[in-house]
Amino acid sequence: MESSPSTTANNNNVWLFYPNLIGYGRIVLAILAMYYMSSSPVCAMLCYALSAGLDAFDGWAARTYNQSSRFGAMLDQLTDRCALLALVMALCKFFPDHLFLLQLSAVIDIASHWLHLHATDLSGASSHKQSSNWLLNLYYTDRMFLGFMCGGNEAFYILLYIRAFWAGPLIFGAFHFMSIFPLIAFPIAFVKSAISVVHLYTAAEMVVAHDVKLRENAQKAK
Image 1: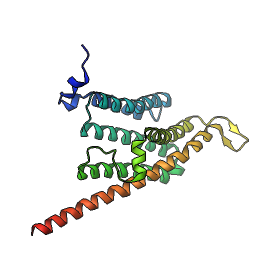
Image 2: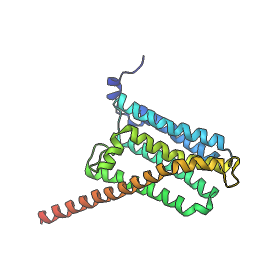
Image 3: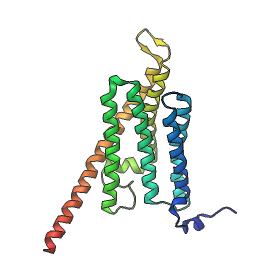
Image 4: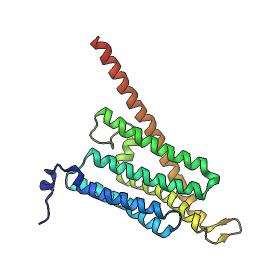
């Protein structure tokens, strides 16, 4: 007999929440993608794409069965960030001339999301997908915008990875065919990184505000 949303909502075993089970599957697929990245691009991209695609289903499961949790949110964020980081690390090997820019993109991505999660906890917000900043509010509340930015960002790095293994025919004797597609997706990845910088700054503001509040309360208590 299939469990109803009301029944699963009363289940407090967070480890076995449906979205978290999906999250474990995403981790396994991401690890498999990492294993195959240097030798088997087809297997690597298949596993990577499946892991990324399941990201939509864990959110659906959390909403449908009322199984949202901080553990699930952090698991989701860690899987996203670490999978992309692994892909960027592979790209650093394949495109050493662009090492610094790839490193910078990874650092901005990891730092902004890490600080944002901690700032959310310190502020007591119920979800990390909340912000008073208009740009971040749009980013998190407009699913089409969020999907476009995240999908375009992932596409840029995936297309770069494919380009490393298959350059395609030479066009006009100047550039390879597969170089066109990462260039098309690059503006989206650039804007996504810019949003991450805003993420980082607003999260830092929240942490500083928390520190100021603690100091003021301590001074009042004297």
